[in-house]
Length: 195
Ligand SMILES: Nc1nc2c(ncn2[C@@H]2O[C@H](COP(=O)(O)OP(=O)(O)OP(=O)(O)O)[C@@H](O)[C@H]2O)c(=O)[nH]1
Image 1 (cartoon, protein in one colour):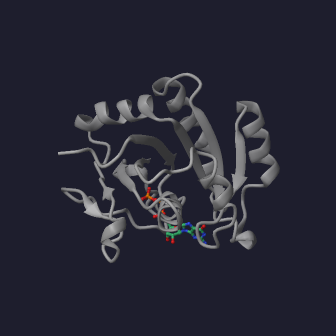
Image 2: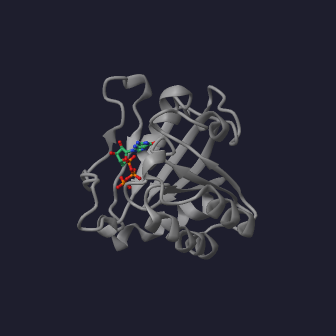
Image 3: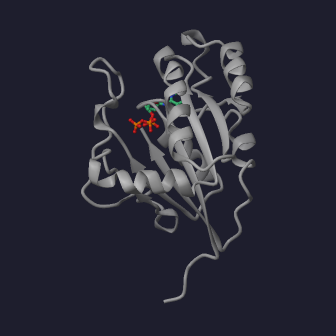
């Protein structure tokens, strides 16, 4: 069977549970990334007991991301970080063209953990992979815990770009979306979410 794409762009979204990775991906996908495969490789233990966001159910097999829009149906795999998927995780880090690190501006812990995610990139990804830092949920100004300047400083230290985004209001989603190479009808995005 002929391949449905000429080139697969691999993008990795990483960050703590509940920071909004899925919502950001959906924003990207619904607005523009209509040929996207999305997989989730996650740790079920990523949730603090009092975390307001319930854990994503872990399906046994790929489930459609947008069942009501089959032409945009993607793969959402949640492998829950089991040891047997470690090879996949490592392979995705290595094969990624870009890595987007996400924290939640209302959740200090998710920002602190960015340092750990950076370490993980250093250990697993190819040297020089393009990285981008996103402070998501910037529509929730009243609940802000992480100041923009803190994140700017961290981004400068690591030599990477930084944006505050909102998957809810779409704020800065376009800036981020246009950073990776523009999708061609026969170019597909392969986006993996990791937590
Ligand atoms: N106000 C606001 N809420 C958001 C935003 N993005 C996500 N959320 C909410 O945050 C919660 C978690 O969003 P998800 O996209 O599932 O987060 P995730 O990082 O994929 O979480 P895991 O699947 O556990 O890794 C949901 O209740 C979303 O509605 C945002 O930009 N603004």
